[in-house]
Length: 396
Ligand code: PLP
Ligand code: TYF
Image (cartoon, rainbow, N blue to C red; front, side, top):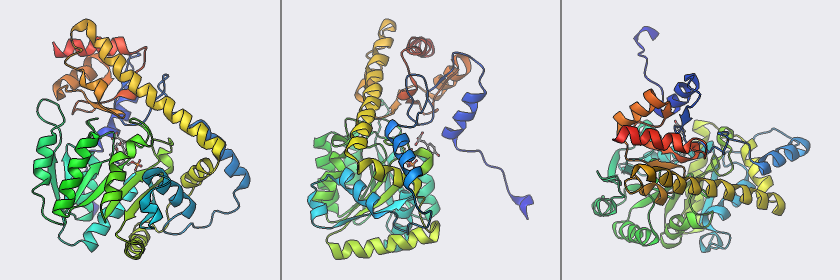
């Protein structure tokens, strides 16, 4: 029967890793896949994570299942981090967290929940968005639609976004990137979040806020502005949280789906359904990553160490954004690329065309996604002049 199976190409972003590894050019630069890199191009295990792991190795007493909702201590820790330690939503007991295999697992839980319990409701995704959003909601059988997000001049198209949101049918789901928009790097201002809230409320939409980069934009609290605004002012919100980036736990698959409901009773009902979806997909989530996060957040010392390292990472990225624009100054390109210093998170829509991206790869061994998305964390003071020179050559 397998003779009818066709081969399909792999993930375009993950494929860049392989292409980069094969390239023998000593000057090669990887601005592809979205993982954090330090000044030496490494993605290290964070200091507090190493420490927590050695404590776990010593103290862990069982590998038994942790249950479909995961570790309740992890749920509590993430609820405080996402919604704020003194959140009125938590005080009212109208939020809960269900642990999942990464943010991706949380998105799939949300997608299956929407398909089963909100029949006929579609989901609205930013154009552009992370390609896996399309795959996940397609696989779950949820009808997808787009709202504009980046215009032809490579600017945030907030007017276009708002105009489309105003026409979404009542009860549909709108996926919002909490911060560090993937792939563009364009985030909403506080005023713009307020406007989105008003439209969502007026039209009775259900926001699904994808929070994959908390702490990578302006800070752990600052990045949560939009999420908290929605949770505190609406009866119903879904949030997907990920510890892949901010704890550097990528392969440990550590995330959760948060439900905010009108009251504790309705929250418990929704939560009970999440456990069914989890059981049908993978039964129980993996436990190592969440155990690390609990170990860190429950220790004042480890938590302070973790926050310090996260701040170093964020400052490095934001510093690189400014240095990148400066490096383009000698070529008269600092105005054309000024948006790079304004964008937030790991990613920038540079504005480079697919053909220019191809030339950067073929002639300079500089790798980025063909949409012109660059992972800013792949830059370093050593390669900045080289990258700036190459960009100047391909845009001329
Ligand atoms: N959402 C967005 C926008 C992302 O960019 C990512 C990942 O990189 C995720 C969710 C989920 O990541 P993970 O499943 O690794 O936690
Ligand atoms: O957008 C990125 O680069 C990250 C990492 O299938 C990623 O979100 C990319 C592709 C993928 C899974 C993770």
